Image (cartoon, rainbow, N blue to C red; front, side, top):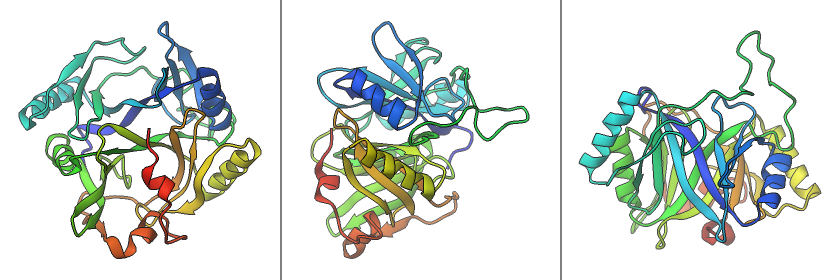
Length: 306
């Protein structure tokens, strides 16, 4: 676990097919706040309990999926040190100039062995609607829709996740909180840079660069139930849930945005400490690990990616 280098997930940029439909989904239904629209058409959103200017970027194009996931680091010096460590580990590093996203400083980027692009950055503007910090109420304004507090994590599908694991541990100081280990090798890994059960996760998959889901944190199991009511009310396509994971212990619903990108609303999850051992699941209890109540796998959950 790193508390002085990589702090947390910072943003995710998703590709959507219809921006108007996407905004109805992410703003009105999920409950994110609309921050701004760029000259290039990208739209910037944030959860009500986030301090940063934005955490979700939507880009309209003709294929759904994820462009990039960014992580916040503590200082500009940390950013330089991570650039050196990533190069030394064996990945090429590029630089994105400050201002490419409004309010965000320079970023460094690399493509993982699994084919996904990640970026690190140290500087981002404080949101104009950040949570109160002086005599604070519990929220700055009454939350909307599913009441998503923040962008929490992503699950990504691709090859070479064993090398991904080495990279995150050796170059970025993440810890392996949990994994699925089958007789022919590791199937999935849950990685954390914090006290959360996971900040990013990977499942082994033959095609590189695939996106499984972006997760948004809710405050309670009651809020997960409220989200399910809204999904039924507005005919949002549900993958599975409400249910619970054995892995991470999170309470969850999986559902799809209008472009086919999978979302998750997530509550709970255990606290991870840096001296905790890695929790390991095998093929005998795999169903219980993924869906603790059903104890069975959902084929669509395993196979549908963008």
